[in-house]
Length: 210
Image 1: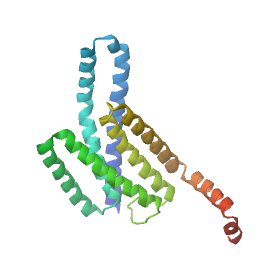
Image 2: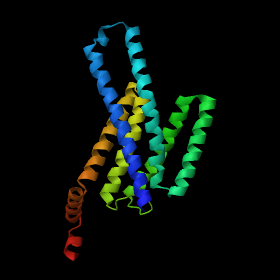
Image 3: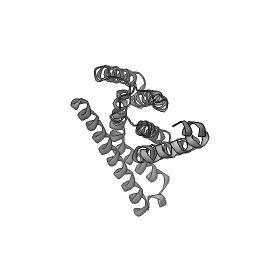
Image 4: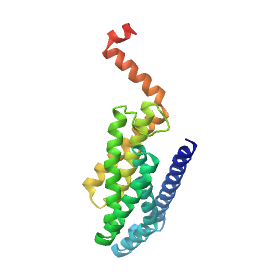
């Protein structure tokens, strides 16, 4: 049990560090874009700047995708099966890289993580005890599932930022899932209390029986 907790802690810490680095790069890029008046330069200079920042950001996005590829299935699989799944996923990504390039391989990992996370979210919503969570609280589990879903959608949003309609949809879904996830995680007791009051109003007979 201690090893499992340590494993979870290491994954959380690594994901947090990578997200922090990505945030710092993005904030720096935005301020530098404004302060250096990049927006006033010719289109070629703008694209050169964007490509440079994308190259700087790319390694950390790759690491984040790989971390998500491990974090998500660990909710569904025991540790020994998780290692096997990770090997299979990395092997599939390697084959995809050879056949279709690195971009397609990363998308494969992302979509596999997205599919698994949707399953995790549905199981958490149903209150399944099959999932591997450190906390047993229903709202904390649901909140954690929403936050992980938001992280995957956030990375997908980075990939599809050149498609305005899809980018906007992914942005708002990401925002909603992450905000709701944080509310459920950090205010689980308050959310549970609100849910109980709502249930009692809808089912007054159950309150009288209790």
